[in-house]
Amino acid sequence: MRDLKKIFNPKSIAIIGAKDKENSVGSGLMKNALKGKSRVYAVNPNREKILGIKCFPSVKSIPGFVDLAIIAVPASIVPLVVKECSEKKVGAMIIVSAGFSENGSRGKILQKRIIEIAKRAGIPLLGPNCLGVLGPKNGLNASFAPSLPKPGGIAFISQSGAIIDSLIDCNENYGFSGLVSYGNEADLSLTDFIEWFGFDKETKVIALYLEGILEGRRFMEVCKRVSKNKPILVIKAGKSKQVQNAVSTHTGSLAGNYQIYQAAFKQSGVHEAETLEELFDVAKALSWQPRIKNGIAIITNGGGCGVLGADYCQELGVKLSKITEENLRKLDKVMHPAFSRSNPLDIIGDALSYRYKAGIDTLLSQRNVNGILVIQTSQIMTESEKNAKIVIEASKKYPRKAIVACFMGGKIAGLGINILEKNYIPNYSDPKRAVRALKGLIK
Image (tube, rainbow, N blue to C red; front, side, top):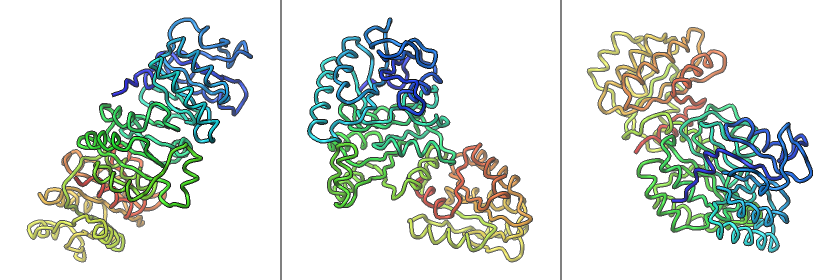
């Protein structure tokens, strides 16, 4: 396994190509690095100071050791900078500059040159043509991403930096152990990072966005090993022949035949998502909830939503467990006379929180119910906050059973949703999203 400590936990960072021009990559890299815990050096031969930090003419003129060099200079200058970094014996390099193998034969020659230098020096190199890396737990933003997301259990490794940017800027409550934009994979590859996060204690699930794989056999071997202990999810872009050229001009990789990728994912224990929404819906559930055997229950105060949930369960192969006669008799004592007496358990639209409590406790007490989907529609009498607290109590009482919520609506539902997600109960706005998340939790 490659040692990536200098990338994810650098004590010192040199920004080569640092700038003070607003909205430039060099300025963004400086601002992000200065917010972290690492010592930051600015490198620019044309400036004396940047953002109040002394500027050095080259990385070689920096006193002391440099753990991580982030390179943001024109592609034609990159080989010289990499050579200086190798002479300085920096710990690792990230090249955010574009204009390499994704940019034709001249770019391929440049990329080959920088790799030869880096490999001779034994320095791990990420990129080129990448966003960089983010480590939310230790405050590391070695990238030009707009901000640092909150820490959590998802590791996201992406061939596209723009997807990471957009993900960080969305309103969803994801938490990350690390985010990596790996670009052209000139040295460090997708597989190196899968292996690294496979051993990382903070990482609960690994999510991938990829267009092509450079080392298929090693990818499969590593994924087979890692997926035995940590789930790996993937969204594959470049499926159709019509977009093959777009893939090669994006990161210089070859997308290849999609059916081959599907077979490789299946053999390696990698689960494929159809959309980015699905990728992160399932990833969030896996980072917050236990893996379970098949067999779940649905409780709802809206019959139509329960029926939709049941439809999606059948479509996705999620089994609905039968409620025992003994438990139905218990529920008869507390429920509205018109409650469904079946799974999905419809506790009727006027349900107050005591009905949710009775239903959730009863369903989770059954041996053949391994998880539950709690659906709440917003009626005038709905007690969203109380319902959320009941769900949290149930998760503590039954820690080995998975709970996923679908609190639907805006103002009324929002009061409960905030409580749920602060306590690691994933909530989804639509029953299908919730059922897909539950499906992802099934071993």
